[in-house]
Every structure is written in C-alpha cells, then in structure tokens.
Amino acid sequence: MTLAEKILAAHCGKKSVVPGEIINVRVDMVLANDITAPLAIQEFRKLGARKVFDPKKIVLVPDHFVPNKDILSAEQTKIMRDFAREQGTIYFEVGRVGIEHVILPDLGIVLPGQVVIGADSHTCTYGGLGAFATGMGSTDIACAMATGDIWMKVPHTILFLYRGQLPKWVGGKDLILYTIGQIGVDGALYAAMEFAGEAIESLSMDGRFTMANMAIEAGGKAGLFRVDARTRQYVKARSKAPYTAYKGDAKAEYSQVIEYDVSKLEPQVAFPHLPSNTRPLSKVGKVRIDQAVIGSCTNGRIEDLRLAAAVLKGQKVHPEVRLIVIPGSQEVYLQAMKEGLVETFILSGAAVSTPTCGPCLGGYMGVLAAGEVAISTTNRNFVGRMGSTKSEIYLANPAVVAASAVLGRIGGVEEMLQ
Image (cartoon, rainbow, N blue to C red; front, side, top):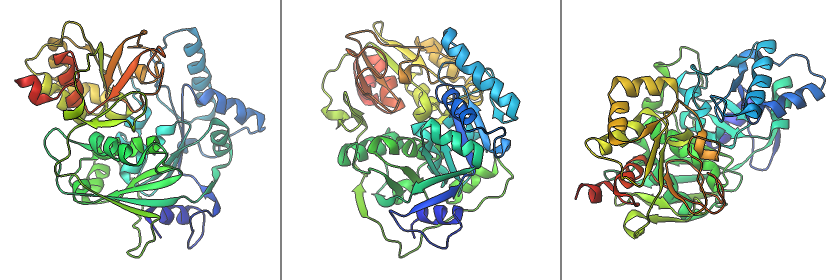
C-alpha cells in the first residue's frame, strides 16, 4: 500500500484498502472556520445531536473575517463562539488566533499519521506532516462532529519525484506551481499526491506545508510527505502526544510516477485566471502591479516573512504599489517583531496586518477594484477571487512578490538589485 492507503487502512480497521474502495474512516481531528462552521453547526442541530463525539478533537478557528469586518461576520463568529463554549471544543479567539492551517501544525494540534478533515479546501496542508488531511463540505463536517466518522472513497496515489537541488530564490511555492502548471488543475483529480525526491528531502517544513496546501489546486484529495527526521524534530518541539508515522510499502502501486529535475528551475508565476497558467520568471514580461500581498495559509509562515524581509531590507515599495504583509499567526507575528522583520516591512512602506485570511478570498484588508492587478503569495487567482471580477491576480513566492512591490511590476530579486 501507499502512504495514503496505509493511513486510511489503519483508520477503518482493515488490514488493507485499495483505490476506489468505499470505507468508513475514524477521524482524529475535525475543523471549521468562521465561514463554514455556522452551516456545520446548523446541520449538526438538524441531526438531533446534542454533544460532539469528542470536544478535544473539534477545532473551531475564526480566521477569514477577523477582527470582524461587519455585522454579518460578527454574527457568524458569535454562532461559532457560542457553540464552542456550549460543547467545550477547542476555540481560538481574536488576539490568540491565526490562520487555521498555520496554527494547527505550529501548536502541535495535528500530528503525523492522523486523519484530519476540515470544512475548508486547504485542509490538505497537514499532509506536510505526513497526515491524511482533506477538505469536506459543512454537512459532512456536521456528521463527523456528531459521530467521529466519515465515509470516503480511497483515492489512487500519484508519486511526484523531484530530482536535484533547488536554486536560490526557488522554494516549495515554485515546486507546486510548476507541478500544477505541468499537470493542470485537474491533473491529480481525487488523487493522493505524494511528494518525494532529493529536493523534497532538503525542503523545510514551511516549504512542505506550502506544497501540501496547494494540492487541491491540482484537484488532489490530499498531498502527503513522508515523515523524516525533519518532521520528527518539528513535532518534538511542539507536542509530547504519541503519534504513528506510517510508511508506504516498497512495492506500493502508484497510478502514476512523475519525475522532475528541478536543479535549474526558475521562480514560477501563475498568470490569471488559473494556478496552472504558470510561466518561469524570465518569461513574464512587463506586468505592472497595483498591489502585492505576502501572507495566507500558503505563505504566511515565519520563513516566508524572513524571505520577504531579506529582499525588502533597505528598499522602498514603489510609490504606485500597496504592499500588505499578513503574518499567519500571533506566534509568527511576535517572532517577526523579535527578529526586526516587522520594522523592515514598515520602513519599506508596507502595511502589516493582524493575522487573517483577509484579501486571499476577497474578504477585506486588500480587496481589489476593477482594473487593478495584484501579485500575491496566496493560492488561487480565479476571476473575482480577491475582489472585482475585472481585476487580475498573479501568484508567486514571497521573494518575487517582495521584489515586485519594489519594482512596481512583476520581477525577481536579481532584477531589483540591478
């Protein structure tokens, strides 16, 4: 069996499972946010359920519209807060909150080998830890909160092997954008995407979370990394809870094995209006921008902010560009302050926000007007994703976004320093 199949077999009480098989899976963690939780809570009530199956395995995180931007978002969060208090679930309040997919791994709430489901498509982020994590609809989440079980079709697994070492200014965001550009937004439809190879072995945990996060942009059911010494070190610093690190069999059958030599890979830029519409930085041309965003569940971690600050040190944001920097959690924010990164951002002319998803989904803190162009470290660039349907979004890694903010157009660090 593959890594994904091993985890699922262990969670459905079977010795083995095969792709396409329908199974009933016991979950280790269920999560929802301020957009999806209210609907899940409503459906939970309709079921006639009175108590969640285990309050220590339910996590509710308000992160999309917090601090609340209007009355509606305040009402959404109140529904969530009241339910959390009633049921005794894990809940994060403003001032102690961050983006759900950043804080759950960083606080040791999710662990390797677990099955994690969330009412958010980017729940697949936790595959960076070697967990089977996937997004589901709010109705499925309601049933899981009540029973602790979900039914699922076992996905087939595609193995992606990345050969060689990554060049400077190239990271996990570039690997996953390149991959999506190669296979398309449906190239891994309902597949478990397993990432391996020399480039992956040397990739940081933050880079792995970025790649797992965007597995859904290729249609993936989950994105998984094998547990190694780097994973164990990360978990040891955050949790004393026991976990099982599953390993795929040497003779595991994959539906596909796709190999890439990434030793000469350039930073990648996804053009409007799909994450698969990628080009290497050298082929971008002259694209003027109005706004640059560094943050989100994809690239709002401390390593991302360090990278951006290293580019912005001693530089000034172009006078016609708005640069918005959003730490992924309060812990990331505090660490960025201690390291002087926030000072670097402010001196460069950037705005630094409290942790929130904000502009990623066109919520607030950076909504685009008609005709405006943004480059962002976020995960999607669909029509209208960050505001007006007549705006345009380009996706790139934090270094490229920071350099572009200085240049006033999309460009790389070397070009900025010329």
